[in-house]
Length: 75
Image (cartoon, rainbow, N blue to C red; front, top):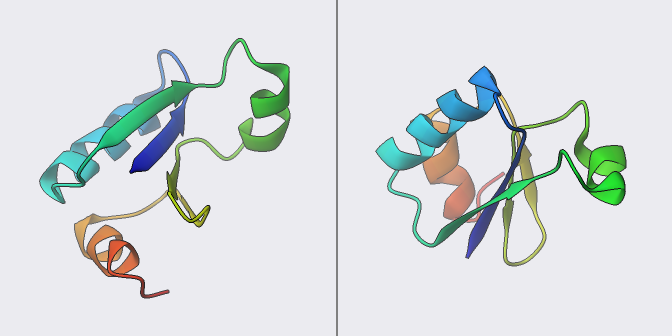
């Protein structure tokens, strides 16, 4: 399971979603941080951020190759 933390009306978030689609990331859930103070404090300047089930996070910018390596457990 992967989670993308993002904002409403976020061009970078839209770009990240396109990259994740190209990378065929399975089971992707989107979480919008706009109305959550705790998420805003944690991710406010960092979105979009991809998190995996183990809690690892990949900050934007990323491309298909970086996502593929990261999802395979590589740094």
